Image (tube, rainbow, N blue to C red):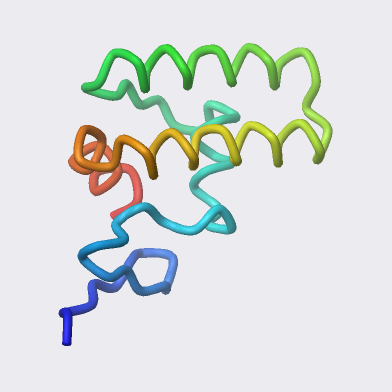
Length: 91
């Protein structure tokens, strides 16, 4: 059985699923700029910048949900390239 890792938000992550769920509050905090973080991966940084700009124009719940969906999908697809960043952000 894989060893589980406890996150700061109280959830659990399996080693093969290191991207936190979309419901984790830090996704919204990251996208709203509540804490400053620059990804070590250039495409992830560019996506984060673009999504922050989009949310400055439209900060509705629907827009936030779309932004979280996009960032989460990117991180799921390129997990191995953003894993260290995700560990820093979510732990």
